[in-house]
Every structure is written in C-alpha cells, then in structure tokens.
Amino acid sequence: MKTALITGGSRGIGRAISLRLARDGVRVAVHYGRNDEAAKQTVAEIEAFGGQAFAIKAELSEPGAVARLWLAFDAQADGLDILVNNAAVIAPGPFSGQTEGQLDQLLKVNVQAPFFLIQQGLSRLRDAGRIVNITSGVTRIAFPEDVAYSITKGALSTMTLALAKELGPRGITVNSVAPGIVETDMNSWLADPVAAEAAASYSVFHRVGQPADVADVVAFVVSDDARWVTGQYVDATGGSQL
Ligand code: NAP
Image (cartoon, rainbow, N blue to C red; front, side, top):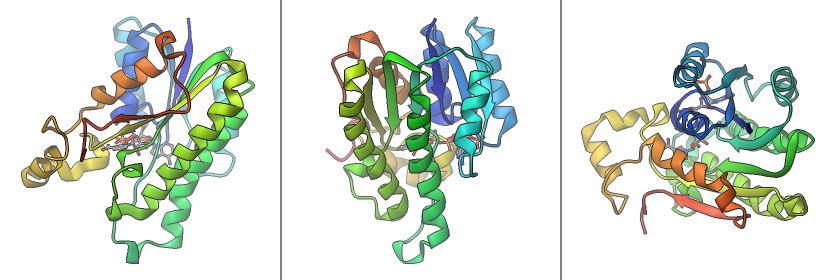
C-alpha cells in the first residue's frame, strides 16, 4: 500500500485530494494547521469507506514546524510515496497596502514550508515517488488582487521545474497543478451571487471549480500512468481566461 502526505489535507482542495487518493487505495497522512475538527472529520470519512488515514498537526509558519511534522509522520508511517504540497495562505488586498509581515507569513507557509518539506522528506520518499505542488492560475493570469500570494505561487512553480531535474535520476516526478477559482473556505466571497457569476465566467465551462475537479487531476499526476510527465505546470483552471 502506498503512503501519501497531503499538506492542508483536512479542508477544501486538500481534503478532496485526501479522499480521492484514499479511494485509490493510498494510505493518507492528513496534515493540517489548527482546525482539529476538520482533520478528524476527514480521517473519519476515509475510514468510513474502508480507507486508511491519520492526521498530523503542524502550523507551518512556526519555526521547526517541518521537522516536527516529519517526526510525527515517522511515528505512524514507514516511508513515503507521494507528497502533495497543498497548504497555503492568502492575504488579499491592494498592492499598496500589503505589509512586510503579510509577505513574510505567505513566504513562510507557501514557499519555505514546501521547500523544506521536500528537502527533509527526500530520505523518506521512495524512488519513483511523486511530488505535486499546488500552485495557482495566478502564475499564468495576472492577479493584482494579491501580489504577495502570486509571488509565492511563482516561486513554487520555479522550484517544481528545478527539482524535477534534480530528482529525475531517482525516477521521482515533480509537477505543479494549478487550480483556478475553486469553491472552498479560501473563497468565502463566492457566497455573493454576483461575485460567483463573475467567477464562473472566467472558465470556458462557465462554472466555478469544485475541489474534486482538482483532486482528480492530482490523482492522475501521482498515478503510474503519469510516470513520463515531470517538471510540468498542469493547468486545472477549467480553461480560465484562455
Ligand atoms: P483552504 O480551504 O483554505 O484549506 C487550507 C488547508 O491548508 C487547511 O487544511 C488548513 O488547515 C491548511 N493550512 C492553511 N494554512 C496553514 C498553516 N499556516 N499551517 C498549516 N496548515 C495550514 O484552501 P484551499 O482553497 O483548499 O486551497 C488549497 C490550495 O489550492 C492552496 O495551495 C491554494 O493556494 C490553492 N489554490 C486554491 C484556489 C481556490 O480558489 N480555492 C485557487 C488556486 C489555487 P487548518 O484548517 O487546520 O488551518
């Protein structure tokens, strides 16, 4: 049985990835930051259909969080096959008002944490393993509503390319999957019907994405069928702003 670690695997897109991989027969480490209840629910839902999962709590902006996360992982698993860097934070607001503190927080959670999770995870990740970084359509489509967030996703995308070459000799693939606008807690503004209609109009399918739309793409990228795909930006935006 393969083992996967999904950061931010308790809610939103990460939760959908956790559920999908568990349905595919993977044992899932559901990482989260603060919301114990959501993590408990995701693990319970997986166990309810006969899947295997366990939760790991680590607030990624705290010093030493990555090392603590891996120690907690080691206590419950023997090696890793799939790492999905999904956890991220956003700090919307005009460029003129974005603060040093906000940028620092975003860089810590969205860039530094994935960087060191991969670096410190390599001794656990088996050959022919999979790394997927969840980036965003903002690396293709200008998003001045959150310049700091966009920068972090660009950095993650660049890291993907460099590490694909670094880890190729071990048969490990490294790809990014980029969602467009997806209905999750991150986008609570979608509750406004006017905003939701505008968001739907970005996609050629004229709807907002659902977490499963992205999770199904991740399931392909981590499958054996995707063994010849690495260093790629996989657009999962529903054809947004083509
Ligand atoms: P979400 O609903 O806000 O869920 C975030 C998840 O990450 C939760 O499990 C949360 O755990 C965890 N997390 C957040 N900050 C953390 C921290 N500092 N330390 C540890 N864990 C933390 O997010 P989402 O909308 O599903 O987004 C998932 C990924 O997709 C992100 O990389 C995001 O940038 C990307 N994305 C999303 C959209 C979208 O429209 N939603 C679009 C493009 C890209 P707790 O609940 O415990 O805090």
